[in-house]
Amino acid sequence: MSDLRTVPKHTALLIGLMIFGLFFGAGNLIFPVELGRLAGHSAPVTAAGFLVTAVGIPIVAIISSAVSGCSSVHGMTSRVSSQYATIFTCLLYLTIGPAFAIPRTATVSYEVGVAPFIQGHGPALPIFTIVFFAMTLVAALKPGKLMDWVGRYLTPLFLALLAILIVAPLIHPMPTVANRPPQPPYDHQPFMHGFLDGYNTMDALASLAFAIVIIEAINQRGSTGRRDVTHITIRAGLVATIPLTLVYVSLAWLGRTSTLVVPNAANGGVVLAGVSRHYYGTAGQVLIAAIVLVACLKTAIGLVVACAEIFRRMFPAGPSVRSWVVIFSVASAIIANAGLTTIIAWSTPVLMFLYPLAITAIILGLLDPWLGASRLPHRIMTGCVVLAALPDLVRALPIQGSGTRAITHVADMVLPWASDGLGWGLPAIIGLAAGWGASLILGRPRRWGTSS
Image 1 (tube, rainbow, N blue to C red):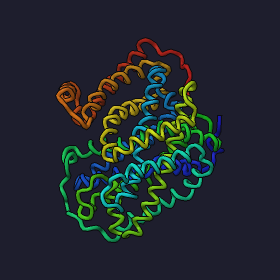
Image 2: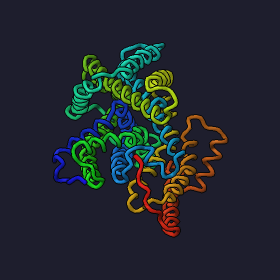
Image 3: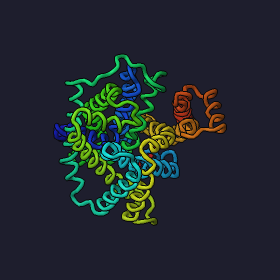
Image 4: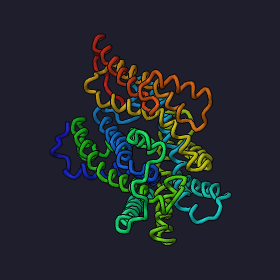
């Protein structure tokens, strides 16, 4: 067992900055900007809800992994069943990988770095995605020192330029409409809609995948006992919370004050490009576009490699890591051509289903010391959430019909808060209580250990 006093005092600071670097990618720039633009005078309340799911839950997820001793997604969910753990892990990595997050890196790059410079998009997006993912493929197949170089130099430069972009409106505010009323859906329960908007960052899902990296980094610095790892993780999480909160709040404020400068923007990427052009002209826009391009490319390379490695590990008889890299790069290029707005629209239903399951796994991980080795709380709570989250998935589909409306109508009648996208909340509480109670009545089995 390690002694917490032997761990370097700056470990929590370094790990906290590492968490910030892992969570904050160029793709996450667009969501708080869009939130601020549409929420009007409700932006502070909406941003508070956003911070819960974009910052709070991801940090708690890493702490949950440390508490439970399960540093992998599969390990945290295997107490439901090995089959469920495999399915959930695949869905999670596909979502933060080739289905949505990786294509989004290309489309954010295009919206911020290319679209502002061309008249009429035409074949520009397909050409850009081919070049972008060709570079991703080459780097992912033989990354060398590229990732270290980009992470060491270009990420800090990216953040420095972002700070310059945010400081300029503070010194010379953009013309704006005072007390602008919120636009739908933020005119109704803004906190709740901000909470759901935080799903789009995918950071709660990513945090379950990143937990193993963070916990191993803590172990390498001299702390191996679960208690010590948990203490350092909590302190590091608090460190990461500060810059994440400052950046997201600043971007939301930027979006709120941009409505006259960038009217009728289709998404946050368009707003960001317009604001940079407003303050710094073409030269500033070119520089910021280059940084966003490189930051997104770095993220895409990292995600392709991570997804390829996990799928190779889960399916050892299947394709090699190099083959998975090719498959995921090609699939991401194809999906990216749908465009940023379409990708966000279709990712929302998936996130409305996966996020409740991720939150369930996080809660069960935090309660691990009290739940013992019983599988009942895990199985009953997760089963309730799976059933209750399905109507949220259906409700968020971009295409609606009589069948989908019938499903959501029944859910609205049966489940409290279903119309607000939180119909899974009460079933989760009931499932946890029922599972915990059943395990106490039937007697807790001896702890069977933890998976990693």
